[in-house]
Image 1 (cartoon, rainbow, N blue to C red):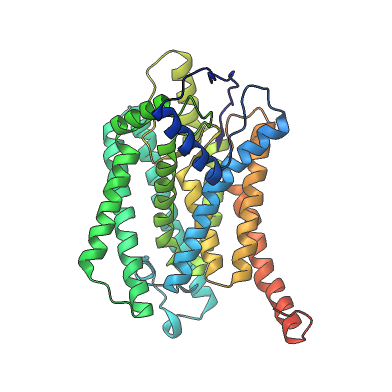
Image 2: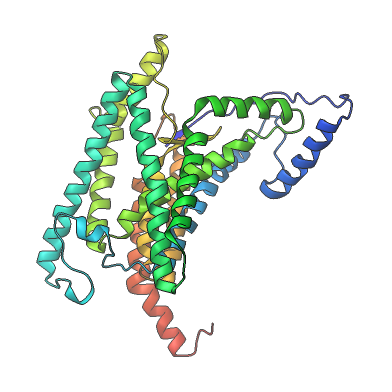
Length: 389
C-alpha cells in the first residue's frame, strides 16, 4: 500500500463565464454526479489532518466494499462449499475428494493442504520474480501482453462459468451464445478502458475540457468505470480460491502473509527492491518504467496493489461459505485492518507498507472467534427465546 501526497491548489472556477449550452449541461451532470457520489470538498482552503485521513480512508473503503459485496454475492448465488467446489478443487496437486467422498483423516488433510499451499505460493513467487525481471529491464510491452491476456481470461471465463453454475442451480434456461457474447464484449470493453492509453488520454482531455470548470473532484468520470473493471478483475481472481478447500486456503494465506512481509520489509525483498529501483531512477533522472494498468488500483490519494484487493476478497469469500455471521465479522475485520494500515502509513515516514498482514490477521481472528464462539452463542440465545429475529 502506497499513500500519495495530496496537493492543495487554489480554485480555478471563474464565475464570470457566460452561461452556454455546454455549461448548462455540465452543471446538470455535475448535480447528478454530486447526488450519486457526494459533493466534492472545496480545495481552496488547507485541509486539517483529520479531514485528510478521512478522505484517504473513504477513497479506500469504496473499492473494497464493492469487492467484498460482489465476492459474497457470487459465493452465495453459486452455492460454493467450504470443503471445495468444482472445477479448481480437482486441479490441485493433491485432491482429497468432495462432500461425502472427502478424506476425514486430519494428518492427511494437513499434509495435503500444506503441499497445495506451497504449490500456490511458488506460483506467487514466480509471478513476482517475473515482474521483477520485466521491471528491471523495462520490458513494458511484454508485461502489457501478459496482463492483457490474464485480464481477458479472468473477465471472460469467470462470468461464463459462474453464470452457467447459477443457471444449473436455479433451473434457469439461458443459451450459451448469449452468455459468451455478453461476457466477451464485457471483457473487450474492459481491455480498451484499462489498457488502451490513447483512449484514456482522450477521455482525460474531454474531462478537463468539460468538467474542470464546474467540478474540482480529483476523479475523472471515466476513472470510475476503469476502477470498477479493476475491482471486477480482482473478483474474478478470487474465484479459484473460493473453489478450493478450506484447509488449503488458510495455510496458503498464512504463507502469503509471511511472504508479503519478506517481500516488502526485508532488504533483499523483491518488492522492496522494485520500490528502491524506482526511486533511484527518479532521483537520477532516468526514464521511468511506467507501471501497466491492472497492477495498481490508483486514486489521487493512495495506491493499492490489485493482489491486495484479491486476497481481501478471498478470505471474506471463504467466510461467506460458512455462515452469514462469519462473513459479516470477517468483512468488518478487513475494513478495520485496512484502515489501521492506512493510518499507520499516513502517520509514519515510510513510503509504503504491506497491505495484507494486519488486515488478514484481524480477519483470521474474527472469523474463527465468530465461527466457534459467536455463532453458538447466538444460536443458543435464539433457541432459548432471548433473541428474536
